[in-house]
Amino acid sequence: MTTLKAQVPDTLLNQVSELAEQEKTTVDQLVSIALAAQVSAWKVSESITSRAKRVDYKAFDEIMAKVPDVPPVPGDEL
Image (tube, rainbow, N blue to C red; front, side, top):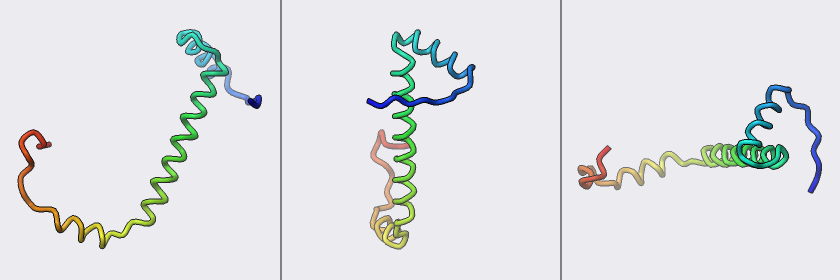
């Protein structure tokens, strides 16, 4: 495992320290979890953006035109 040195505002460190104490874990572990979650969110966002650029709206419209225009099955209403 690699050690990462970062500068954070004192107020943020205090909040993280309090949360770590409440969760009965270490600041290191809490920061590691938070960093992993944020990196994952960024990757998902990149993936969605990439897929959106490849969308074929004409094909989508053709597929949607095949969906019958009927009321939803009871229980599936919005």
